[in-house]
Length: 130
Image (cartoon, rainbow, N blue to C red; front, side, top):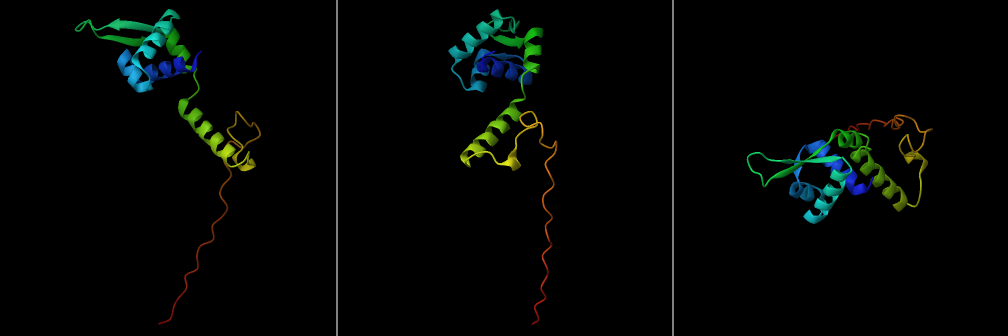
C-alpha cells in the first residue's frame, strides 16, 4: 500500500466520512491529488462514494469493510511519528546511544518500561544566622 493511501485510510477511520476537499485539506495535498488517490482506492475496493440526498453536489468518501480492516491494520501514526523523531534525534547526536535503545519491536532485549531515574538527593536547608 502506498504511504498516501495509508494516510487516507487513517483520516477516514479517525474522522468518518469526508468530501475530497476536506480530505485534501486535512492531508495538506492538492484536491486533484486527493481525487486521484480516492479513485484508485475506490477501484481497489477500499472506499465508497456517497451522494448527499439533500445536496447531490456533495459527495462523501467512506471506508468499505475492506478499507476499515486495512486502516485498522496500519501502524499507529503517533507511535510512528515518535519513532521517527527519536531516530532523527539519535542520528543528529552522532549515533545510537544504548540508553535510547528504541521501541521493543526494534530491540527485543529492551525493557518493557524504562528504568527508574537515579535518586535525587534532597537539598539541605542552610540556616543563616542573622
